[in-house]
Structure formats: structure tokens, C-alpha cells
Amino acid sequence: MSKDNTIHDFELDLICDYYSSMERQGPGSPEMTKRALEFIPFLSNDAEILDIGCGTGGQTMTIAKNTQAKITGLDLFPKFIDIFNRNAATHGFQNRVKGMVGKMEDLPFPKESFDVIWSEGAIYNIGFLRGMKEWYEFIKKDGYIAVSEAVWLTDERPDEIHKFWTEAYPEIDTISVKIDQMQSSGYLPIAAFLLPENCWTTHFYDLHEAAQNIFLKKYAGNKTAEELVEYESFGKDMYEKYKAYYSYVFFIGKKI
Ligand code: SAH
Image (cartoon, rainbow, N blue to C red; front, side, top):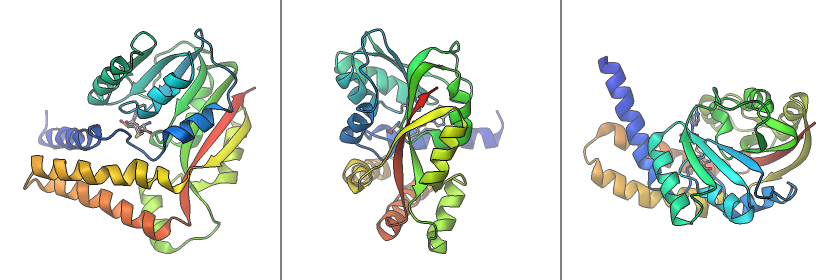
């Protein structure tokens, strides 16, 4: 392994460690997961859901509590999947909720395997349009897709926030563009709703504070760890300053 690789792995490990102590790894809330579920017809015990970029499974356990379906959680990071499977066992869902390590770019399933593909705060890793198109074939006919995605709330915005987001995620766009992309990928758009502020504050950035305290103690003097905390705090400041211009929206579509 080259020196670069080693440093890279260490950084990934750090990022994992930071986020693994948090119940969620992206903005959202149990209430909003439940609201998105309300747009999808009853899911019985033979329904199959795939939760892509499931993280440690905060939203997955909410889906499990509110449906009878079998759920597969898929995430790139083995540490998240270990915590996910422990969470499933703690909730008594181990027989129908299973986490596996995998890549969203390379889903290891036969075509038309799932009644629902779910993905909260994770489709940006592949890009919204590519995810919509590539995941389509894994959904059964008349099945659903439900994803949350970063969007601009206005047609224009201050340079500072424009730059911050386009560097983090160049595909961030307006709600109408995302709905067009969903439709042109073969889905009937069913619903789009905005995540309220508490999905960013109470359920996300507030959790960072506790995580950061533990993290900075554990990695005292580690420059990469300090930079990671700084980056996350900067994200929080940006949100406070510019929340009128961006948020996350849940998009629900039906495969037709
Ligand atoms: N759905 C969770 C986690 C969102 S964070 C929540 O809302 O809390 C984004 C997640 O995507 C992380 O857990 C990250 O490990 C995962 N991820 C990033 N790239 C991925 C990829 N290429 N394939 C699968 N998962 C990926």
C-alpha cells in the first residue's frame, strides 16, 4: 500500500468514527421518514425494500417500525453496517432487517428485486440523475423510489453559499429540475416535500456537538481530526446564515 493510500484510509476511518457515534449521518427525522412512507401503499411482509446509503440505520429502523416489509440496508462502510445490524437486533428486527456492505454504483441484485428503493441524504454520492436512472431497473413494475436530496429553494443566491454547495455537490439544483429528472428517468412524480428546520438542527447539527467533543478528546492533537470538525462546524454556520436558500427535499416517485 502506498503512503497516500494509508493516509486516505486513515481519513476514511476518521470520518467513519466521527459519524458512527451519531444516530443519523444526514439531515432528516423519524417524522419525515414516516411522512414519505405515507405516499407509498401498504407494504406487507412479502414486500422488499432496499435502503441505499443506509448509514447506521436511523431511518431504516423507522421504516421497519412502520411497515412489515423485509429491508436490506446497503452502505459502503463496514463500520456503519456493523452498527446497523446491532441496531436491528436491539429493535428485534434482525429477521427482516439486514445490513450489507456494498456500492450504490454497483448494486448486487437481480433486476426488479424491490418494491421500494429508499435513500435518505445519500444519492448525491452517485448524483441524483445517475441514481434515478441506474436504480430504476432494480425496482419492480409499479414500485416506488423515495430519496431525499439537497436543493436550491430560490433561483438566485449569494455567491458564498453558491460556491460552498457547488464545491460540495455540483448537482445541487432547484426542485423543478429534480422533478423533471425524476420524470425523464421513467418515474411518475408522486410527491415532493421540504424537510423542516429541525431536520437540520435538532436531528442533525445538534448531534454533532456531542460527537465533536468525544472525537476531539479521542484524537487530541490530530490535525486531520481538527480539520474535519472545523469543516462540519463551517457547514453548520453556513446553514444558519443561508437556510433561506437551500434545504433537503424528499422526492417520491412511482416506476411506470
Ligand atoms: N441514510 C443515512 C446516511 C446518510 S449519509 C441517514 O440519513 O442518516 C450518506 C451515506 O452514504 C453514508 O453512510 C456513506 O457511507 C454512504 N455512501 C457514500 N458513498 C457510497 C457508495 N458509493 N455506496 C454506498 N454507500 C455510500
